[in-house]
Image (cartoon, rainbow, N blue to C red; front, side, top):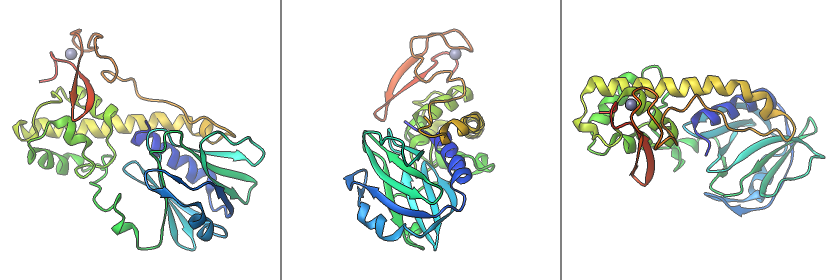
Length: 273
Ligand SMILES: [Zn+2]
């Protein structure tokens, strides 16, 4: 599942590759993604427009075009955006194809269909149901000031709070587990029962683990943009995620796995308190 660093990598790659290219034509097949994808609607607005900027909010991509309007995109569980030569065979589960003026196609492939593609008219962003209530960005240098009081005000387990997109946008299961381990904080500890200095440390670890992963992702941009390029997996070395039953790399204790808020989380019972 793409997390924030992967989405940021896609954003940078698209900003680089799409530049100010014009969309010539739209193809694909309408289908039920997270929202209904209506290809006819996109075909009515996209041809003739040029890409202008690629932005990110949490795990959402916002591709701005000129004349103004925005293609909103979420990769869901298995979504991929690829740039391919027109002659490249279409992969199964390709839902949308944008023909570009440089002879390539921007394609959206999503086997599990939890992704999202929608058109936002200028001004619609503030009222969009997916975007309107998103919390601030975790890469914000000021996260150490605003996140701790937000966590302190809540009684839910910290792991669940980090995944709450209204508190902080774009933190997923992998990096929440890693940040808690780095900060030495138990994932099931309640926000309101955690001392502020520990929450400040946690907030800073959230930012730094994401920053490191974004930096790591920068090296895969070229692969991603290559024809049929597979924008694959990359990550900073994961210390706890997926390592339950293995020894903690800090203290050697066996890592545990618990289910919190419906998601499995691995943690160290010795050094996370
Ligand atoms: Zn440990």
